[in-house]
Amino acid sequence: MARLVPHAETTATNLARVLRLHALPSTPWEPRQRAVAARRLLEELGVRCDESAVLHDLKGFLLSSPRGTELVVSRDLDDEQRLEVYAHLVAHALLGPDGPELALAARFEYVPGRAPGERPPNELREEVLADAVARAILAGRLEAAPRLIYCRDLGPGRGRFSRAVLRGLHLGSLALYRRSRSYQRLRSLPVVTALTERVHSFLGSAA
Amino acid sequence: MSDRDEVQVARWSGIKGRVGSCLRELRQSDAATGNGSRSQARLAGELEDLGYHVTQSMVSRYEQGLLEAPLTLERMVGWALCCEALSSRAFKDLLALAGYYLPWHAADLIAFDDLLRSYRQLSLTDQVVVRTRLLWHILGIGTSQPGGEAA
Image (cartoon, rainbow over all chains, first blue to last red; front, top):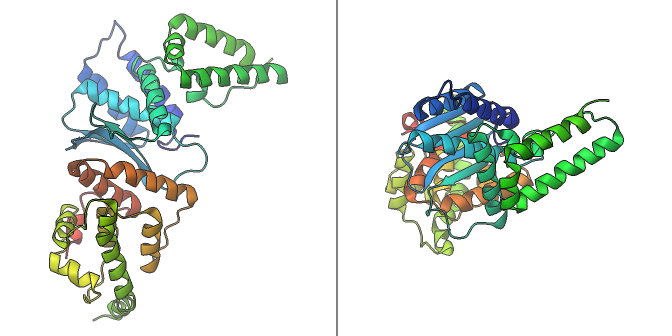
């Protein structure tokens, strides 16, 4: 379970839902309202947000410890950029450390062109993946990302065989998603998302 | 002086030499990271940015183990975070020396070293913001409060 943000999966799902609702043609929200709604949701879910920091290399950063989680965002960002930072850091929280809860964890969001030249390969890999997941959150379609990213529980399944097949499919999808930008684009297509949802419903629901 | 203060001062007297040399080593070891030794004046300025009033002269006397006033945990952590040479192991050892147990396991130590590595690559402006927040997370100090702690 990701620990960078408490209940990261719930937070990401709800953030995507709020952004989807606020993007409906019947109720088109201004970027300002979307950013405020996102911040309010995060705070309701226990994440402190500070949008007043004076930052130079960073657009924002996330710090998490047993004392809580906080998102610090540069005061120079506009509403859209602030929303992107929130989505990106929540995406990092979904992808963040499994295993035991860390005493202290952090993620930095760099201003384009100001990231350090030498970053560890695992950090760069996570960055690419977080980009894709953040796009899914911002589009209000978290399901455009592989299910194992935002939901570790695959359901009871129809039986041992179908459960194993389902797990294999999801793991394969996640592995492809991690490695291939083309697959990320393919996976985000509504028709592919619908197909994977149907396959999951068929194999994942209890007999 | 109350009994409690007497105990605190006696305890500080017992460790101030070792804590001082440990802090001096952290500051001077900045040279090993290729950035040159951090001057006492610069360190005093950075502690000021964190909200702690520690003058250059106090830095010097703390390092020599001459100051009778105990260096608080908050300032010790702030001091350490300002030094480029800080590592998770050195941090844990420093706090242990001062009698504070940091309940970090191997994974925590690795994560903290990673965090320090990324943090040191930031501009000074960003480092100050991150450092202030880190203090809160390590010690539970409210970001608006450290000024009130100043001597």
